[in-house]
Length: 185
Image (cartoon, rainbow, N blue to C red; front, side, top):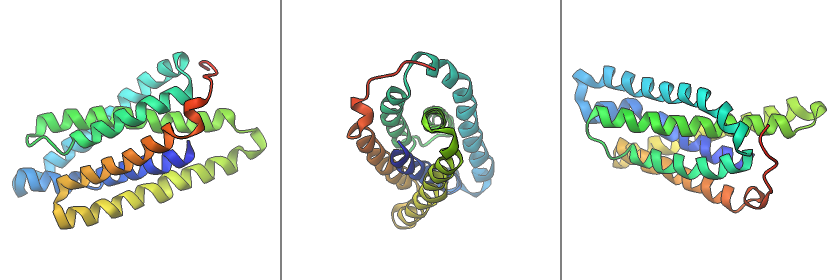
């Protein structure tokens, strides 16, 4: 799940790094500022929705199942971010992606904390977060910046979905798929 989180965080870094360039590309100089703000607000709103939904979801669904389902949905949602040419549909898709993306991230953290023995918890958490956010997010932002500079910022969402596909493959080819759900906690 930690390796999958690296790829999923790269997906997030790739997409988040392009909100301002996409806003400028789609809406021009005059509307880029508030359009990018609306995109970041949509991302934050999705995160807020996740913070309400995830605890209830986790009571009913085992962590491995949450990871196996949320990773492909997140990947499809971030790919859909490349399609809208108007702000309203774009912010809706971003909010949907953010809700699922944040649920996936929260799930990884909660699972890691619940399964790690107390004496190892600080080291395991530090390593997991460093791999996901310290390496994955900047790696995704770097790649999407390159993609955006060559093909345009909307193609960076396609690059983000590429990282998402890696996360999906890692999840579905890992022991997560074969693990017996241990119930909700």
